[in-house]
Structures are given as structure tokens and as C-alpha cells.
View 1 (tube, rainbow, N blue to C red):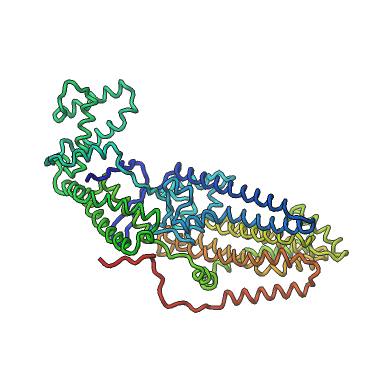
View 2 (view 1 turned 90 degrees about the horizontal axis):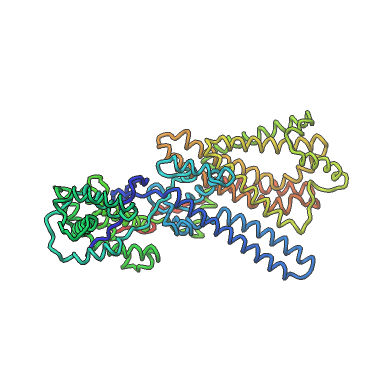
Length: 614
């Protein structure tokens, strides 16, 4: 049985080497800009179509709701849900697909791409979340992905900023099968006598192979000229048939040489390891082809589709394939080889399949929320403290400055906030609150506030990839803005209006912002202060810590948004009631952060399947 001969990858293709637990080096081909852009476009179109379909469905449902008051309430809840779905499509589409589909969104799957971690292992929820949240920087300017493209082209591993923070790479993993014509020709010659060596050396065969594959792309005159030159060079081994043109003679020689190599024949002048390479290929080619079929089946249905005995056999075959790969790498002495490329792809595909992440269960999610996040908040005290200073110090300074000199408000705040404060003086006399509170639209306010605040913290977090400078800017400017607003209202004697509005949700919202700032500074520390780790390793390690902080920030903002939408604008609630809500949220937050949940004694497995001992 002839080996499937893949096309050798172009010499300009970017590759990255990864050492497996079996101490075998795998070479992954880095996905190119074109394939990644095409995959991104496919995913974007899917998101747009999905969102449009949801809007149409909501319009149809809304048209069927009778009654004016009922319709208004239904419309408010529908709008709130629509806002949440829009947020989910924008931010969760990529994270969920990559984490649940082993690194592949529909667009990546169509293009034969996969996201893996730097070690070649499957991408996790944390890694996927990091790389896709930092996308907010990569897509600049104006969703044109200029930053991401520059980073991808300039980086030797084809990484955009999100990949650097997450410690991931995007690889191309499609297997290249032997063309049907070449396979048929190889099978026809399978029983022919095997000569001691082929007629051409490897260099000569590669030259001939390039000509035969590209000859139809050449102009007729150029094709004939090159054929005469090659025929003269290979005159000693060409069949001198006067009835055949030089081109036909070269094609026939190429087919004979290709078939000989498929049967394990060594190249002319090959000795030692070079002859060993051909022996390895000839001996193991049928087993490789059979494993390729099983791998394709496993990639489609998962390992569970193979059954218990099937998985055991697959693991054993994988170990044998890694041994073949190690031997073939030694025999090729670092030279490019179609067989080596093919076998590497097989082993890499099986490696990604076997060493999957842990399954994401409800129990694991609860443990993450109640255990991992608070532990990371306690561990990251210094970066969170830095973010706290950068937010609250400018806030206090700006508030004091506007109280002392109210004219500064026009410089520090927009005209909308100035006009709201002027209106606030009248509203205070009429007994109204900080903002109008049409009860029916509270769900819309809650969803919009929550999603907007979460996206702001995402931006603060992503700013860590600018060495923390953009995050610093956001924290300081937000502090100045909030402080100036407080100072403006206090200078007009209506500070109780804004205080009664901010108090209920402020503890959770401001805590979430400084926690996200701490996450950003962890990323920056990985870039600037790697310590004993490499810069790439430190960034990936700090990224895993930082995403836990960001998850905690998002968790808090969900509750803060609900309070800000339903409680904070409610003018019927007294200031004492709102202060009680604020105090309760502060106590619960302290318990959440400081309480240490008991941890299980069993260590977490690194892989979803335990490979049996050889």
C-alpha cells in the first residue's frame, strides 16, 4: 500500500515547534493573514445574520401583544433582553465556540484553523476569554483590525495582541492527502521490483517535481525551453524515445521517481540516515494511512465515538506514531520532507485530540466563582491598590477643585452634565430624583447599564497590553469625571441628589472598576517585569491570573447594573434605604472576597484522558 504523499509546505510558511509529554517535537504551521481574515469575515457574517434574525423575531412577537400597558411592559423587557443578546453575540460568540469546540469557531473550522495554547494543548475558557476581550484593541482603528494585523505580521508566531496575552497561537491543521492520480500510479507499481536506489538525487527530484507541477502555468515557449534544458541535464536517465517530446519524457521520469520513493527506495547517492528515512517510510506507510482514517473519524465524532477499546487502540497507535516521528526526524537531519510533514500533521492532530482541557461543568463554574476569583483578588492586592489610587485620588482632587471653583466644571465636564445639574436645582425643589424614573423602562436601564459598564471594564483590562498606559488614562479620566460631577452638584447645594443615586450601586460598581484595573496592571507587569520567566511566559501566566479578576469584575457589575436600574433611580425610596442597600452590598462583598472556601485535596488532571504506560 502506497503512502499518501502530501504537498510539502512552502518554505515561507511560519512554523512553531512544540515538545509533547512523549518528548517528541511537533511542528505546527502558523495560520496566515489571509486565512484568518477569511475566517473572521465568516464569523462576522454569522453574528450579523443571527442578530438580525433575533430582531425580526422580537418584532413579530411584539406585534402580537394586546393592550397598551401590557405592550409597553413587554416591549421594555424585550428591549432589555435584546440588549443582553446583542452583548452575548458580540462578546460570547468567539469565547464559547473556541472553548466548547476545541479552538474552532465556524469560520475557523471552514478554513481548517484552530486556536491552541503555546504548548500545543487545547484552548481553555480563560485563554479564549483573554484573547477575545483584548480583541477590542486589535480591531482598532474603527474595526479595521489595523493593530491586530500589524502585530500578526510583525510577530514570528503570527500572534495578535490577544494571542500574546492569552498564550495562544492559531494553527493550520488540515491534512494534505495524496492526489488521486499519483495514488493510482503508485498502486499500479506497488508490485514492481524495487531497485536499490532511485535514478535521481533528492535535489534533482525536487527540481524535476517543481517543473512538472508548474509546467501548465508556463507559457508554451518557456515550457519547451525549460524542458530541453532539463532533458539535457537528465539525459543519462531519460528514456530516449524518439516518439516522445522532452516534456513527456520528463513527466514519465517524474512518475517513476515518485513511485520509487513511495515504495521506500533511497535517492541516488544516499547513505546511512538518508537510506534509513526511506526504509521508515516504506515499512510504516500502510499504518500511517490507517491511522489517518481513524484520526479523521475521531476529529468528527470525538474520542467517545470510538468506544473504550477504540480509544485504547487509538492511544497505542498514537504512541507508535510519535516513535516513528522521532525516528524520521533523526533520519531527515532537519531537512524538509513530504513524509515528515505528513506524519507531523497526523501526530499533531492526535496530540490536540488526546490532551484536551477539563470539561466545563456547573460544579467547576461555581468553584471558579466562589473560590478562584476571591483567591485571586486577595493575591492581587498590590495591582488592585494601584488602580484604586488612580481612580479615587483624581476623583477626590477633582471634586474638591470644582467645589472651591465651580467654573472649572465647564472645563472638566460636558455640556450635558452641566445642563443636568441646572435642571437638578429645579428637580430638588419639586422633590424629584437625580434622573427620571419611568418604572416601565427599568429593565431596559438595568440591561444597558450593566452591559455598558462591563464593556468599559473590558476596555480597561485590554489597556494592560499597552504597558498599562491606556488603563491608567481611563482610570484617571473616569476618576476626574466622577469627582467633577459630585463637586458640581455639591457646589449647587444638591449633592444629596447624586449621592442618593450613586450610593446603592456605587460600592459594587467602583469595586469592579478597580479590580479590572488591577487585572490590566497584571498584564502590564507581565510585559515589563517578567522576573525569572520569559516575557512571553510571564505575560501568559499573568494573563491567566488577570482574567480571573476580570471575571470577578463582570460578576459584580451584573448585580451593580440591576441595582442601578431598579433601585438607584427610584425617588420613592429614602436616602436611608439606599444607604442600607449600599452597606449590605459592602458587607456581602467583603464576605465574598475574604471568606476562604474549602478546597478539594485531589489534584486537577492536566488532560481529559490519561495515557496508559507504554
